[in-house]
Every structure is written in structure tokens, then in C-alpha cells.
Image (cartoon, rainbow, N blue to C red; front, side, top):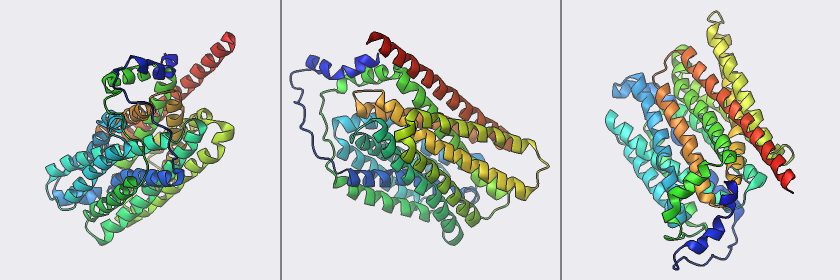
Length: 426
């Protein structure tokens, strides 16, 4: 079936006569493209992390339950996931620039409204809309980075995007802690609106791929379904989604664990975010440095294994209630950092492996990969809002990581079988 995808270009002969001729290859400014891509990924992730330290304050100020407050994180993730495949279609039909600017317009407008909102119900609606914009901007950023090329070079570029992710992971939480201490929590949404506006200016200046009009749109569903039948795409994509879901789960419960269970202040929790950022940075640097020698598939397996081992140790921590609170805090923080490091190795590697397996329809492959990862994370985050017991959510996190590891091991078997088949036919 992957052979069918590699022949996608030959099928354009069956398209209507008004299909435009292939466009000449344009010179792509890689550094500027990567800079804008990093800013958009940074923005999308910071929309969660700058908000996390204030979750208990949001609960108090709006008079809502812990589960209701956590739902504002879940709905953001779901909003980011739901329309991702449509963002991929828009990027192909209307062009990368027009689509990413539309996504950024949604993000900036919803962030500005969140900065002045005082309704609990409107908080959920606006967070979902903000997620739609953030998810669109982030996935289209990955699409125009994919336009620069695939393979292990793509894994290196995605690891650079991971560094932007990690900057938002640690820096956003740190900034959120400062905002929660010295300002009102809604000030974080003002920061997000400004960052989104800067991202729009940057995207508007890039020579991105124009749209193809209606040329390929009637085949959209068929293309997506065909991609889903390629095991070399599906297995690493789902594994990366499970790893992402693990991180989202931890982000959702961590403010309450650190501030309620370990009795940390808002700014102290924000400062700990810098450690998580360093852990993700270390994992991203490992991918960037070793992908040429180790390969994306091996790094993907290493990341999943680290996450699984750390998840099991996290379960063991909550099974030992006699551990002194200061020691438990240190161990919990260290295991959180280890899981973050593993995800930094797993996610860009899994996306590179998955997208490279699809020889044609790059925008569709990136969009579908992002949709599946975000959808898995959104479902898990919604479920996690109901998990208040530490042992319960830790068990779910360990199970997700273990399943991700099983899938990447299965992917390795599929790749070995495919290589053996290729050798036997040559």
C-alpha cells in the first residue's frame, strides 16, 4: 500500500484538465522558515504552560471545581486536535501562508477575549477556540518545515522545533509562576496575544508554498484513508501520540500535586518548570546530535523505554506512602524530568519516521500525524481531569508509556520485515 502512495504523482493524470502545471521549485530560506516555525510551536505550547501555575487560582477566582478548571486544559488540547486534518487540507488548497494567518487570527482574538473574560463557561469555549488556532498554527509550521525535506534531516529539524517546545515548556511555566505571584492570571493571555501577533508578522514575510486550488481536494478522504493503511506511518504516529498524552496528563495534574500535595507556592512551582525545560532540551539535543549515527527509529525506541521505566517508578513512589515528603518531592520531580526527556526523544523521531514513510502528500501526512497525536492526548487529558488520586493517574501514565514502547518495538519488526522483502526481490 505504501507503494501506492509513492505512485501518487502518476495518478494526477486522472485529474480534471484544469489541474495546474507543477510549480517550479522555489528557493526556501531555511533559517527564517525554522525561526518562524519555532516561534509558532513555542506559542502553541506556551498557551498551556503559562496557564498551568494559575490553575488553583482560576479554580478559586471563578468558583469552580478542580475538575472544571482542569477541563480548560483538556478542551484546549481537544480544540487543537479536532480540525488538524482540515488545516492540512487548507494548507494544500489555500497555501501555507493564508492558512497559518487564519489560524493565528483565531488564536490572537481568543487570547485577547480570555484576557478580559470573567465567565467560567466562556473560559471553556474560548480555550477550545484558542486551541483550534494554536493547533492550526503549530501543524502548519510543521508542514512548511516538512517542505524543506524529509528523512533524518527532518528529524533534526523537528528536534529544533522541540527546542522551541522546551523553551515554552520551562520558560512558559516560569513566566506563569511570576504572573501568578505578581499579577492577575489573565495577564498570561495578553502575553499570548502579543506572541501570536509577532508570529503572524513573521509568517507573512516567508515565501511559503501557494495553494493548489481544487486540484487534489476531491481525493482528500481517500488520501487520508490510504495513509492510515501504512503500518510504517500508523505505528510510530500512535506511539508519539501516547507519549504526548503522557506529558499532557502530567501537565494537567502537576499544578495540584506540587501546590496541594507538596505545598509549594505558585512561583516555586513555576521555577520547577525550568527543570522540565532543561530535561526536554537535553532530549531534543540528543536527537539533533545522534540522529545521523543512531537513526530516528532507534532514538524513538530509546525515548519510549525511558518513559516506560520512569512511569513504573512513579507508580512505585505513590505505593510507598512512608517516603518523607521532601524526598518524595525530589523523586517525583526527577521522574517527571526523566519522562519529559524521553518524550523529547520519542516525539520528533516518531513524527519523522511516520511522515517519511509517506512518499507523497507531505502536508496530509504531517496533518494526520498531528491530528492523531493531539486526539490521543485530548482524550487522555479529558479522562485525567477525573483522576484526583496520585496512584490512579500515575498508573495511567505508566500504561500509556508502556503501550508506546510496545508500538515502537512492533514498528521495528515491521521495518525489518519490509527490508527483508526488499532484499529478496532485488
